[in-house]
Length: 210
Ligand code: HEC
Image 1: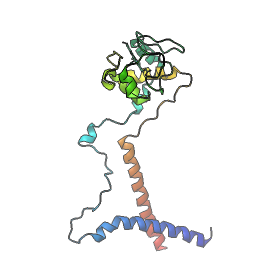
Image 2: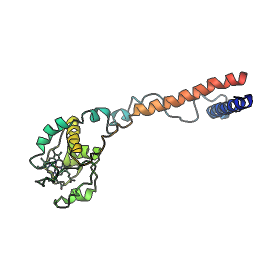
Image 3: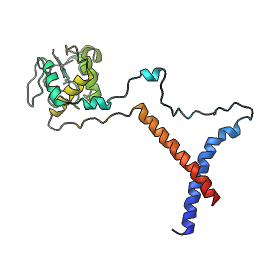
Image 4: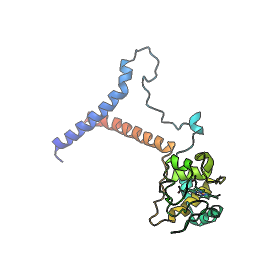
């Protein structure tokens, strides 16, 4: 590369570095000299949040362990709790509950020839993984007034397993879900940004000194 080209790149890197430093230093410049050494702006914590309400907040759905529990073989066993009212066979008829073939990813209360409760119809749900997981945990709590007179599946592993069983009972099964980002992953991204800033700060004086 010719020297002019290199100089242009060096100037660009330097300008970026200076810009970042300016942004970081501005609050200090404008702060009164005897003011306490606290930043005048909030950039968000780079430390994992370990206290207060954030700790109690549920992790976003689905986490890797839930996806890991998606097991059609186990799901077939769990589904025995459903077979008094449902089947998931292609072209199978309705029982007390509707036929469940192809239900994962489908609109709720949409099997034309089944008489649903007004509650489930009015809820206008789509059976994505999270909605199914919530409904199967405690149907009457999630859709108050549903006709699905079933106590629910307490264990998350059982729900993941039976949902996998239902997922593959379809002409074109929906792909399995991807794990949701955890707060830790968001923090890692913030740390990555911090590393880029530090790299620029290291490079800038070196180019300056040439
Ligand atoms: C006692 C009977 C009964 C049992 C047991 C039962 N269900 Fe249901 N299920 C129903 C009825 C009735 C409905 C329709 C609900 C409504 O209209 O509110 C329903 C609806 C559903 C729906 C929504 C269907 C649609 O078309 O929107 C799903 C999904 C479902 N059940 C899954 C299950 C699974 C999985 C199990 C077992 C873990 C189970 N059910 C156990 C009776 C039952």
